[in-house]
Length: 226
Length: 226
DNA sequence: GTCTATAGGAGGATAGAC
DNA sequence: GTCTATCCTCCTATAGAC
Image 1 (cartoon, rainbow over the protein chains, first blue to last red):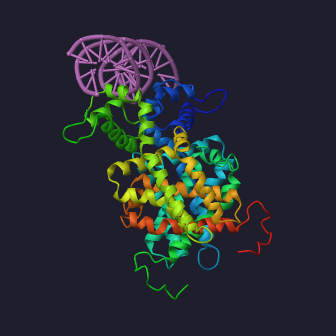
Image 2: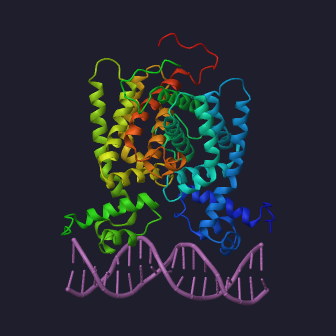
Image 3: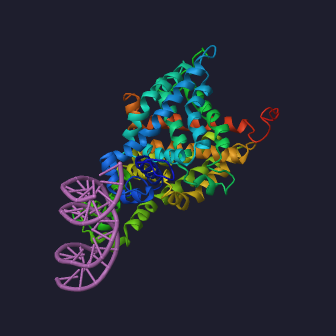
């Protein structure tokens, strides 16, 4: 039954509250009682709507994943419609832009979601959620990166993607560390600041490792092509 | 009193067990009982030796931080002794090499420590531990990066460092995601593989953002110098 | 330094009334 | 769909014997 004031159902309010609290203190750092109190619903509602605390986490995680996946693919397809070889920086941009856009204008729910994602991505216990929800689309991006870097060893592309996603998730973790470190010169919340730097940084990184033919003898002559 | 078999004191065994378990399941995902059982000591020992569970985490975190800091500074000083301007890739290398070396040859304790570091770095609740234990040395690295990139806007350097540390921590999280993603083509445990790619990737990224004078008009002509 | 025992509460989950 | 009441496990922390 929707709440009179907010118009949101108990189930949605549970998802919202869980998202916010899991993001701030982690899955184990939050109790069902914390969540239901914040959501203004009864403790038994988690059991009723989701079955368990763990299933609630899964539901929180899945809720926004599909929207990201869909837009990532749309943007990737759009870059393909350009002429000629895929542009590396454009591929990176179509991967990150759906996130940055929601970070900047998606409201608090999306911000919490990304902070949660950062924790999940860095935790062995929960990383399987990343695999299940995002890897199908990530594989398409890896392919696109490979097309944009036809001479690169596939392992270089995987490692580059790994570096990229690490940088991306820390950016969204909103831990405030960059702010403290830079004496407030940089703000984690400055989405334009990240936007301007992220894709150029990563594209240049990919290009640099692709040039080194790792795995071949270090002193071997570079390929003539390129 | 040291254990007869291992020769390690109860306090050390508590630190070891806590490190391993915190790394795997997070601070809140582990109980004092889990830790003392794994360490083979009595539950009351955490209180006796550390005072509280939280203080045990702090002790675990601090134990290895200083060793990293010392070696990072030593390596940084060594690169300064070279002639001329600081080399960007060498600066990056002196920052990461102490980690990679221990990842490859430091044993399970160090591996756990790095995985814990990954979780701490991405959690708003604990990120203050990073600030307290690592930022003094990180500031010196930021300065060094700035010297290696004299034309760069300081904000570019901070953001670049942020991307670098994000990539670094995910690499050490050992979540197994890269392995699954690449169909076991890449292994998170392949320290030579990371080593060969990390510094070139990051150095190229830094150089690329430094070239774009963010904050100035996008269409402004590039500086003549460089 | 180490262990027993226990305080005192918070944890996830659910049966059953409404 | 929602709430009350409760089960029973697990938690952190400590007092006090040895």
